[in-house]
Image (cartoon, rainbow, N blue to C red; front, side):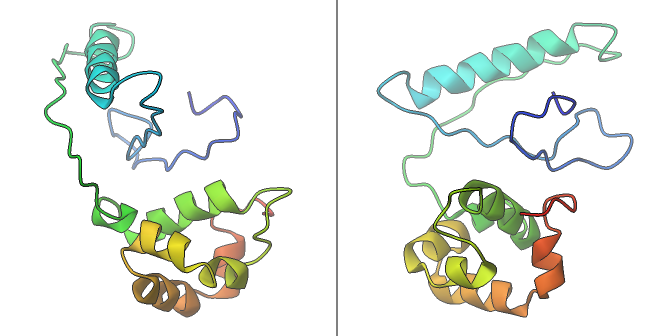
Length: 142
C-alpha cells in the first residue's frame, strides 16, 4: 500500500499502469519459509487481488515460475537509477554507517551486490550529481 508510510519507498509506475509499483523485491529468511512457498503465496495473492472488481476489470491468474539459486546483482533486474534508489533506502538511514554517497562508494561488497562489480557501481554513482543523489527518494532529505 503506497499510502502507508512503512519506511519502504515504492518506485511508482507510470500513470495508467495496473499496479502501483514497478517491481517487488523480497528479502526472505529461508529459515522461516522457502523461496518457492513465498513465491506461490505472492502469486496467489496477486491473482486474488485481480478478482476484486473494485481493483481490476478482469481477473488474471499469476503463477510462480521458478526459483533461481544463483541470483544476479540487482542491476541485472532493474535499471541503475532504481538500483541506486533501493541501495540508498536500504543503507542510508538514520544511525547507518553510511552518511554520504562517498561512504557507499567505498564499500566494495555493497557495490558488487547492487551493481555486479564495484567498478560499475562506483562509475555510476560517481557520475551521478550530488543533488540527484540527495533527492533520489522522492526529495526526502536522507
